[in-house]
Amino acid sequence: MTSLSRTAGLALLLGTATLCPSTGVWAQEQNPNIIVEGEALPDMAELTKGPEIKGVITARKGDKMKVTAADGTSTVIFLNDGTTVKASTGLFGAKKLDMTNLLNGLPVTVKTMQSGTNLLASQITFKNGDFKTANMIRNGTAQGFAEQSAATEGLRSRMGDIDNYNVKATTNVYFDTGKAALSPQARAELCQAASTAEGMDNALLLVVGYTDSVGPEDYNQTLSEKRAASVINYLQQQCRWKPYRMLTPTGMAESDPAADNYTAEGKAQNRRVAVNVLVSKAIDGF
Image 1 (cartoon, rainbow, N blue to C red):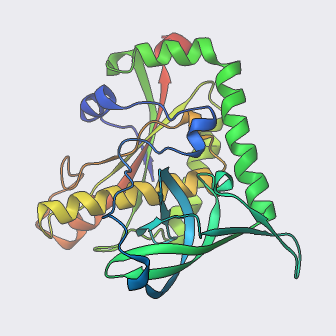
Image 2 (cartoon, rainbow, N blue to C red; image 1 turned 180 degrees about the horizontal axis):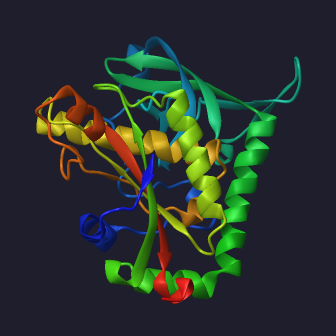
């Protein structure tokens, strides 16, 4: 479901978009649209056994991390000196690590303690192979910036003006009402879009989430951001799209509808995430 994107509709987004960081800081920080938040951790004596959380680390900040599940829901989890970190090395083997090994993009299983809505990680486990992959992505990101530093800085300096970019294509993936989970069709289309963009020199992806008009504005804003995060996670983890070639994802709620919101068919077209493939005109040759 690929079509040419509307240039005017992306101008404002590109005015505020920024490239993801490229060095070791990438492993500990997240782009400004995906923020780690949470209340102060209560007294340890108040904690009881909490739920087990499975997902991918999408942000780290201080004593907190954000884990995003396959359906796009995110959970903020506290860390402290009592949190243990383990990597499984085989059928029964495991080795203890420290929290510096909790990289963005790492799939984890977290056992928690709970007080009210706050969760504290008691144990974090992950597969050693997944850690190697996340570490390779981080190191590859740094290497990619080193190899393309001149082109990257040139792109950054022109980010505010859409006229300096050619929008090569847009792939839209669609969602059920109130949901951020990717369908099998959406997953296939995302990897196809990444594969196509990979063949373009210095192509960047701009991911924008939308909703239909059902529900309050604040709810739709959050939902559009969750949908964008689901797409970002899948592109990077499953389609192997490099983070340094990704612009900051954006949630636009019900803005810029693709169709009217008066019919079921129109609403279905508006519950989408647009993956825009951009190439600098300086690189594209016109």
